[in-house]
Length: 229
Image: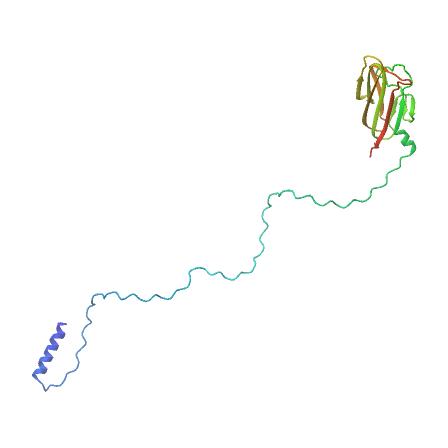
């Protein structure tokens, strides 16, 4: 900078001394000056335009994917409501007819015809038929048609009486009765399942005052309720 000032001063002085001198050529450009201090902040600019949203935009629905593998079995659910009744089944086969002889052997009724006291633990003899049957002999009923039977008895006595209903040697029912004076009537019944050739009897204990006469009858009765399948 100082050098440039000296050169300018010399040229000015020379020009003033020699007015008739010709103008010289421009000098060599000087070196760049140092940076000046930073200027002041400018005024606030106008707001810029709004940019695009940073949120993701939902695209179009894609194609269905491949089916996944089956999951684990779930817990057992609650029982459902009962279903509708099914259709009626086919008609069953016709049953075999029961002949007159079979019917006669499936029902009986006999009475005791003697006042002779029966022996202890022995079948009471019911020997007078009210409704005859070939299945009763000497007070013993022998089953000829397997099934469910109703067995009943009525006994007249003069004094204490105990009667056991036996199926073979097995006691299935025992009844006792007593009166302080005069006659008494006792009765009992039971339903039994019998197989063919089973034997049913009425047997007294030591209290065996069972009567059998007109006006004081003792009766042994039975009949088939329904045969076994």
